[in-house]
Image 1 (cartoon, rainbow, N blue to C red):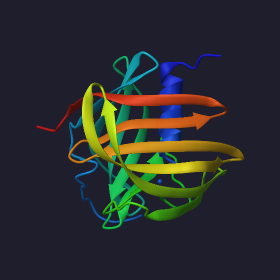
Image 2: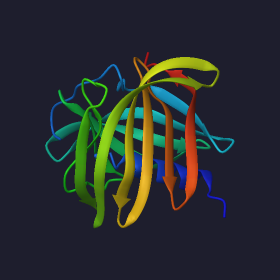
Image 3: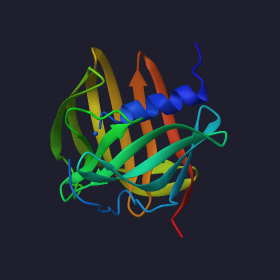
Image 4: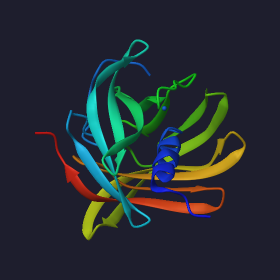
Length: 195
């Protein structure tokens, strides 16, 4: 059974949100968050765009809203914040987890590990992430990356493996996840820094 691009975008965001603290607005060289920043990804022969939209508060936290766009239509959104110790998702499609989940520890360092244990919309999200260093070839370009990997992340009883490849001054250049035995890979096609 094939998934729609919009459905894949939503699953990608859910996987990314296995990765969801509070703090004021900051940025990271590993995930530039300025209004207008865009990442265009290819997934199963189609494109999705993620665009930094605007600042919004989620509870007491200043976050950046990132819209996921397919065929010129917003199909999903997430709210991301950066603290001294990591990059977090604070909401997914308006739903706030019980505890935010870190998806990249800062500053990234090989072999760093952290646990996640929260719920979002009643769904348990639990597991462990580890950071690795890898060279990645994406879209014909070579990148030095830090990889944030969660193996056997429990999402409401389903085991999911998630890997993010972060390149300095660009952000996520590649994302892979396995859910229900299906592998999906998003690869960066184009990055546009905010003007």
